[in-house]
Length: 116
Image (cartoon, rainbow, N blue to C red; front, side, top):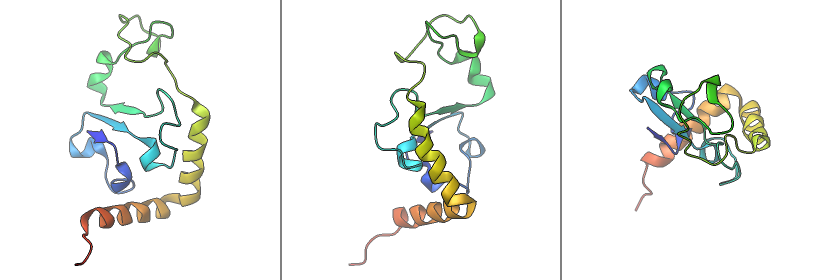
């Protein structure tokens, strides 16, 4: 599932519940990080348990402390974690009620057309 715009799901549905085995989350669209601000690794990818053995490892930093063959798809195992504080503040300030309201507005905005 392409999680390019998860703000139409926050507090309403879960990718796993609708059948997604893999979902990428663009934090800049859903949780207010500037576009491109996180560097590599700041768009988390969630996978169901049966896919964990197939995840890429890194040549320098072993992921999950295993010895899988180097199958890295990125040059860096982590991005700049400091950028995540923006999302944390956004989520904390919005709270569950605010996040759900933002989701509802996102859905309405995406499904309504301007009147002629």
